[in-house]
Length: 57
Image (cartoon, rainbow, N blue to C red; front, side, top):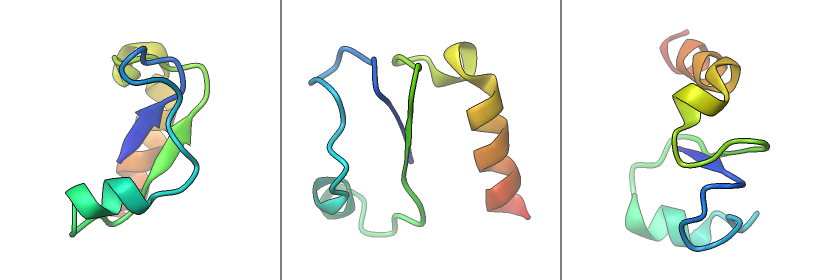
């Protein structure tokens, strides 16, 4: 899961992953991406590419 710090949807994501794990029980990884809004591929394509490479690697 990638969470942007500037998404504007509910404020800045908490560093505590408990709520996300409750909603997504099969959660493998969670990253908070600085300088990204709701459209992470547009705002921080580098962070999205890094996460995808890690997932498939």
